[in-house]
Image 1 (cartoon, one colour):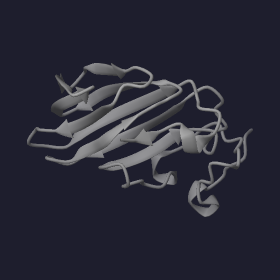
Image 2 (cartoon, one colour):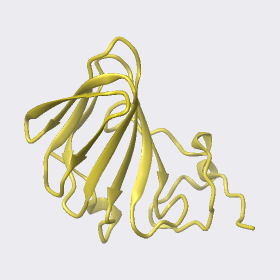
Image 3 (cartoon, rainbow, N blue to C red):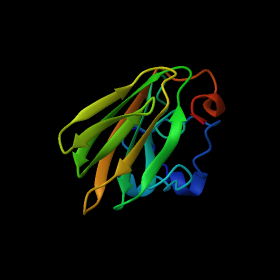
Length: 139
């Protein structure tokens, strides 16, 4: 059985690897710096993943995920609910519940919630960058 680690107590340090197998969303701190309410659920810091990061985002109406890119991996984003626009290299793509978009390595992308309600997203980026601080770059 894997140890039960409270990630809030640990500060979710990206330089420390945890051996937890199951992570509950409420155990993971919310990150607001990139827009919306983001929680990185699968990472080297949360479950010791070695191949990808995966997480969850809630965007309120009018909120957006800031434009960024990934130099080492591609990001796939699934829309659980809501509707809006994914801008990939400045090209708008309508997204809605039960759709997915991909931002390939090096492509600038951002998401805007243009619906009347919350937009809920699940994202996965792979492969991992060699170091966490170079896996995501705002532009």
